[in-house]
Every structure is written in structure tokens, then in C-alpha cells.
Image (cartoon, rainbow, N blue to C red; front, side):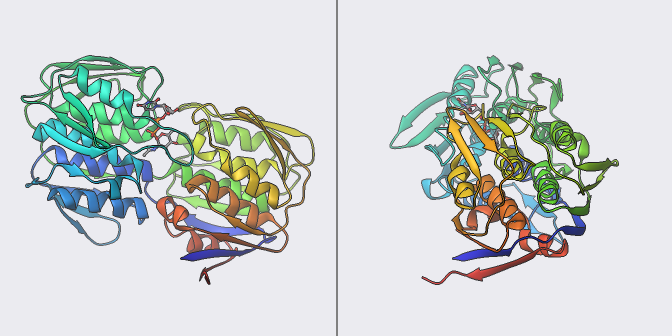
Length: 422
Ligand code: UD1
């Protein structure tokens, strides 16, 4: 196993290019299962989660071929297995995204229930209730969801209690081939869903309401493959922005979508960062002190829960005072707090709020990554801390950050990935 060793205290300077979005890659690759033919997906990031979804698609019989650079060709002519095993699903919850396409095209799917994870219970009841409304039979047996639909799925009116990202994507994919109209109310509005809608529309799907919380899908009999590009990763972009806020310096971030980060840019400017925005680039830096801002995570376009841990690391470095960070999406997403406190931060948890006292000086320490975004917050803390930080279990980071060490080194950070000794 590898660990990341960071010598902190060096401001970031330079340029980086943002990779394709992890959270768009997973539904877009799953959507290739909806019809036979060869799909071409470009701007695919090199991530552990990408490898997991490719493994899953191959296990169903699809042929997945990486082309030059970040392009993948996926031939979905043959599907001869309908089961996603526990071994794959346990490493990546988003594996449940294969349910919708399998059910729509093959009328049958058996997918291991993902179970809880480090950040909370994370049920998939909205997905399953949606499929049932569309006429599928759902049985839970031996830890697996068994879904069956003897004929085509039927269009239905589906209303989510709270907007679910993968829930919206799963129902959306299933509805493209259903008979009649499906309406999804209180749908999630994340940019990755718009990316999926663009792909599905290119494949011949009929979808209204892109970007809104109500989607209407008129099912078609067949789809055809289409070439699609994955949008830049807004969470990766946000992580580097917050990193330069923490270390000081100035960086240019290329191939990104600043319009996908409205709330973060506003908060970082209010915290004292200078940020210039272009169509697909950002120039960001910090010269003066940082101020406290309060954060409340919300579904898009609110502040993303996937950047909550990172901004918490930043708030430990302000000029004093308190920041209240409220997590409303996941009930247990404060695993990074104990590790940040080990580095000298002053954070206390009160229910769903983390109260962060600024003015602290972080000091390097040996810390443990617990989940993907918690690990990113430890990297940010390590970059800003005095001395050496060692982060173990960095496979969490590899799930969602393409070439993290190399990109940080390009920005002048002192980072090394080394083998952990037993
Ligand atoms: C997706 C993202 C993840 C992000 C999260 C919230 C992907 C692959 N992952 O996860 O990075 O942190 O959105 O922006 O895109 N819920 C239920 N029942 C359900 C589904 C969800 O109660 O059937 C609840 C969840 O527990 C959570 C909330 O709804 O409290 C939102 O979760 P959801 O949007 O579904 O998260 P994911 O799609 O799993």
C-alpha cells in the first residue's frame, strides 16, 4: 500500500488541467449498456472508479477498449451476464447505476446491495421504488436486489422525497426505453445529470426539463450509440482552488467549468481569495489573510457536500473566529474532523454542525484517509501545515483524483508517493 508524504508550507504556483468528472463517468459508461453498437466516450479520467465501472461492464460481456489519451470505445453488442457481484459493488456504491440500463434493455438485473459506507447509511430505496412504479418486480434476496420486468418498463410519475443524484440517473436511463412518459419530480440538478441527458439525447432519447428539477422522458423503442465527452470535474477543480487558498500563491486551472461552482466561488471570494473567471479557466490566488465563512451543504446549485471536508481544512487557517459548517446531505460525513484536529485544528462537532475555530497553525502529522473527500481535506491541510504530513490509505484518493501527486508537483508542492512499510 502507498502513502502520500507532503512537506507543507510551500505556496502553489503554476498551471494544471482538470480531468473528466468522476461522477459523470460512472453514469455515462453505464448508459452504454442501453443499446448495441460502439459508443465513444472522451475525456474519461484515469481513476480507480473508472477501472471499477469498466470491470463491471466487461463482466456483463461488453468490450471496453481505451483509445489514445482519455477516450474509450465501448462495444455493447453483447450482454450475457446480469449480475453485479458484492466484490465490485462494495468498492464502489455507484455500481448500482447498472440497474436502470440492465433492466431497461434486458428486463433483468441482479445487483448486490451496497450497504452502508464511511459517510452514512446511503440507502437506494428511491431507485427501487421508482423501478417498481415502472412495473418492475423487485426482490431482496441474500444481500442482492433482483429486478425483473417481463416486458418493457412502463412510464410512471415518480417523485423523490429528496433529490438523489444516482437515483435520478438510474430512473432516467431506465425511462428512455420504457413505454410511455415518465416524469421525475424533485429530480437532482447536478451538472453530471445534464451531461448524461446530453448523451442520452444524442442516442435518440426524448427528454425534457434538462437542468431543472422536473424531467419528462418519452420512452423510445430503440437507442443508437453516440459520441460523448465527459464534462470537467467540478469537485477536482474546487479541491485545487481550496488548496491554493490554503497555501497562498496563484494558480491557473485550465479545462474547467467555473459556471458549475457558483456557491464555492462566492464563498472563497468572501473568505478573501482573488478569483478571475473565464469560460473554461480560473485564475485563483490568495495574498492576504483568510476570513471565516459559514457553509451549508445542499443539492446543486447549493454548496456541494463533496467539497465540505476540503473547505473545512481551509477554515482552520483563517485569521481567528468561528465558521459553522452544516452537513445536510450525509449524516456521518465528519470523519476528517478527528484527523484535522490531530494536525492542530480546533473543530468540534455538534450534531450536523462542525464548529471550526480559525487562527490555528497546522502542524504535519501521520494521518489516515477514511474516504475520498476526507482524504482530499487532509492533503490540503498537509500542504498548508508546517512540517511533514504522511497520509496513509491513499487508495481512497485514487478513486476520484486523476494524477493527484503529479498535478500537485506541477504546482510546486513537495509531495511524494511512497510504499508504506509494514
Ligand atoms: C452522489 C455522488 C456523491 C455525492 C452525492 C450528493 C455519484 C456517483 N456520487 O451520490 O459523490 O456526494 O451524490 O451530492 O454521483 N437517499 C435516500 N434514498 C435513496 C437515495 C438517496 O434516502 O434511494 C438520500 C441519501 O442518503 C442522501 C441524499 O438522499 O442523504 C442524497 O443522496 P444521493 O444524491 O442519492 O447520493 P448518491 O447519488 O449516492
